[in-house]
Structure formats: C-alpha cells, structure tokens
Image 1 (cartoon, rainbow, N blue to C red):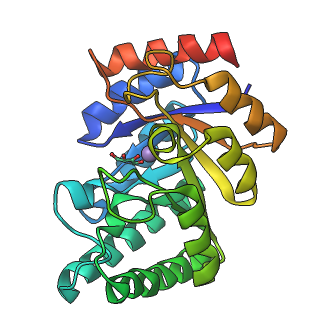
Image 2: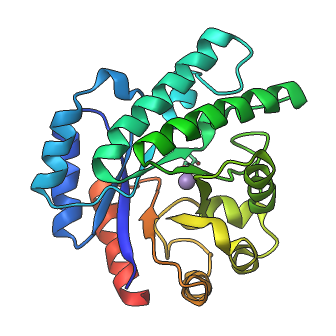
Length: 257
Ligand code: LER
Ligand code: MN
C-alpha cells in the first residue's frame, strides 16, 4: 500500500490538532497542510502537533495566498510579487523541519504575456535556489483552466520545468485537474513519470475517491508500473464534513490499494 495523507487547511492550533488526531487514528501516514501565510503562525506549535501524532508532512500547500489574499508570483506590482516570494521562502523554512516539499499551484497566478511568464520563471529560480540551500524540493502543479489560465496540462508544466532549468522542481499531479485537462490520465502519468514527485487524489467532482467517475484502479496500476514511491494525498471538497471525508477516503483506499 502507498503511503497516504490527507490535506487540511491550517486555521489555528485547535483545528490542526483535531484533524491530525483523526487522520492519525484513521490509519493515514501523513497530513498535508495548506498555509496561507507561514510568516504569521507559530512553527513550533505545528511541529509539536505533528510529532505528537507521529505523522509525516509530505507537502505544504500555498494556494490560499492567491485565492484569499490575491498574492501571486505573476503580479505586475513588485511589492505583491515580493510578498509571494517571501511567503514561499517561509513555506520552505517550515518545510525544512518536516522534509516536506512546497507546492506552487495557484500562487503562480494568471499570466497574459511572455513578460508575466518571465516574472514567474525568475521568481521560481530564486525560490528553488533558496529551497536547494535548505534541502527542500518544490512541486509545480498543473491546474485546470477554470482555476488558472496557464500550466493547465501535465505536458505544459513538465516542459516549463525543463525549459526553465529548475533543478529541484518536480510535478504534483492532481487527478481532479487531470480528469479535465488530460487526454488520458494514465498515459500522462506514464509519459512524464520522471518528474512525478507527488500525487493529489480527488474524484471527478472533488469529492472523496469513489464518489465520482474517475477510474482509480487504472491510476494506481500505472503508478505501480512507474514505481511511484511517494505519497497519495487526498485533497477534497469535504462534504458533508471533514471528518466524514477522512474516514470515507481511508475506507475506499483500503478497499482498492
Ligand atoms: C491545489 O493543490 C489545487 O489542486 C487547487 O485546485 C486548489 O484549489
Ligand atoms: Mn491539488
């Protein structure tokens, strides 16, 4: 069985503690934490909770900087762009404590010309250099067209990483986005396998796996063919509740893995 984790959005100490406890007791190996601004939270408190429940932290999410604060790496306002870079470096500082990777998904923002793309490329070079110095790897996530306007497919994202010469950067593939953008989820995983470093799972409607129409057997089969040995991390719309998603997803994964 793969190592499995569950994505939680950090709000405060109490919510992290509550969900970490349930995630650990439900049989997950890890918790993935979405953090809007790591500069304003207590890192020691998070370390304390994670070690108490003996969980790994495969990755830290960063997208709420964009969705809630409108901060991105492609913003034409230099102050806002610097804010995004400084946040990501703070994510790297925290990630270095857990051997986590740092996700660049929505925080890249939207781009409308080559100039915008170059801003992101330069920012990522800076962030990756900082990650290298801290032993932290970066994940670039292809995200579907309805959430962001570029790097929607695995192929585009793979080519962007290679063309930009980002050495410690790999792909975070997410079954929800792939279901919208890829001709075949399994073929794309196989084709770009050398950079598949992390996997998000959700069904076609972002609910727990098994509640939509994605063929997870096929996905786990190809992950095994490519000898994927990272985490499978459930990133869901947690309906009717976070608790029900945690238990429902583990039940499904135990049945299929
Ligand atoms: C982030 O990992 C992601 O997949 C986005 O869709 C966030 O909503
Ligand atoms: Mn995702």
